[in-house]
Amino acid sequence: MHALSVRKLTKVYANGVRALDGIDLEVETGDFFALLGPNGAGKTSLIGIVTSLVTKTGGDVRVFGHSLDRELNAVKNAIGVVPQELNVNLWDKVSNIVVNQAGFYGLTRARALARAEVCLRQLQLWDRRNDTARTLSGGMKRRLMIARALVHEPRLLILDEPTAGVDIEIRRSMWQFLRELNAGGTSIILTTHYLEEAETLCRHVAIIDRGRVIERGPMATVLTKLNEEVFLLTPREPVLALPTVPGFDVRLNGPLELEAALPRSRSVNELFAALSTVGVEITSLRNKANRLEELFLNLTERKDGLPGLKEPQAVSR
Amino acid sequence: MSLRQQFIALSTLVRREYYRVLRIWGQTILPPVINMALYFIIFGNLIGQRIGQMDGFDYKQYIAPGLIMMAVITNAYGNVVSSFFSSKINRHLEEMLVAPMANATIVLGHMAGGIVRGVAVGLAVTAVALLFTPLPFVHPLITISVFLLCASIFSLGGLINGIMAKNFDDVSIIPSFVLQPLTYLGGVFYSISLLPELAQQISRLNPILYVVNAFRYGMLGVSDVPIGTAYVMMVLCVAVLFSICVLMLNRGYRIRE
Image 1 (tube, chains in turn red, cyan):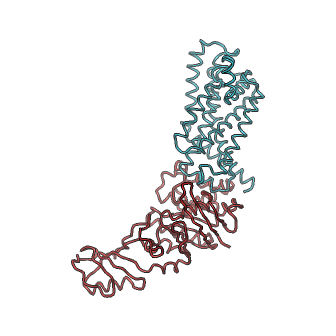
Image 2 (cartoon, helix red, strand yellow; image 1 turned 60 degrees about the vertical axis):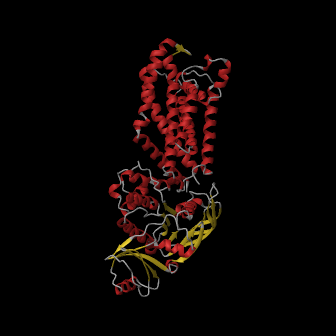
Image 3 (cartoon, chains in turn orange, yellow; image 1 turned 120 degrees about the vertical axis):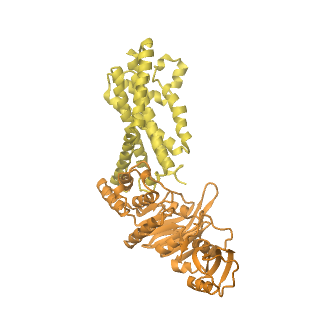
């Protein structure tokens, strides 16, 4: 059975924007699934429809076989959602937010209190349970939304950019938590701008652009579409004139920056070795563009750039 | 979701609203108490002494039921409109929308929250009124039922306002330009028998007139309108407003894209 099955899903907003243009999508039960795409691709509209916050224009949505149109309560019971935007009452206590959410799903008070404790402990928020939500840090607020989404024990957890704006340490602890949750049988759908996040966590991926699925399949298969990566390299000494680097396309952007295109078939080590032969030692490198952006550009052949993708991250040697 | 689970969801929402009223008691309970004391001092003691009696009652006694209803109306309405609109604008309304709560449960929960504040404020201002004038409570059951019906009507009115509001101006326009004039013209401070015939007929179109007079009948035993007509009007208002609220939520009016 599919955790999520979407057929010919369309969404046209009142202002005429066609956010979804006949999307077909299937997510297997127990899968960890990445939904990728630039800003405005239609990811949040898709999640909004599945969680019944957005009304669809056409198409069919089923969650664990339950129809969104005919068995809405069964669909709602099966899903936990962590939205992109903060949507907690900042003036309410952390424990109240989670306990009340359990009550809205019909859990008895005793059960709600017990489940809230489990979830808050899992997300390392138990010590802050009596504080108001506004006193939490950004990462804690994100974790609070995850605890709230899990309190009714959903079979499908949908996370819309859960680690956006979260520091790397918290991001990694959230990844570990989500892995364990998935290993426990919860199906997870994740949208993200970080390809590395999707690569680390997800087994399958669908890429959406302009309201259409442009690629889908196992993560490893989709990543083979990433033919080439472009790196910006920092030499130890200023380079005034760059000799030809054997086997690589390397350009000089300035005395302290080189640009190298690395085909998927070659390794970074090979590039460094080739640069050493011409007397250039590299101290750091970074992706010129986000790898996800490069993947998109490979898939869509768009030359206009993609909105909303994250800045490249430096890696020091 | 079973009926029992709907009841759990309802009691969760009512508890949340109840704690909200208590948490911000300085905004919810205290101002109407101070207002009530000022009304009694100015209209009751200072001006009321020159007015004398109305419908056979001391003026302070005559205006007390209307003033209590005015506090209930304002607070029941204000509680729901601000609670619902803030949850909409801050997006934590989504907590309820993603859960399998029936829309009728969401309406009932907010209505109950308005009643909680209306009752709390009503009891507080009644206590203040009793400091200034004795109130006989001639028909206690009518007094209590009108009290609850009034809070229900204006909670539902506040909810409609909250659902429709797009910004903070929309939240304040109705109370300032509709509710307050209707309340002042609804027989709080006078008997409509003092008005010319045409003005009396126009006043009878004002639903607040029925609430104020039914409550006055419960407390003092006098009313400008037949008590049966007042009950029909109030029950009808609750039924119509409740249906409108549920219909708006079912259609996702201004809450679902």
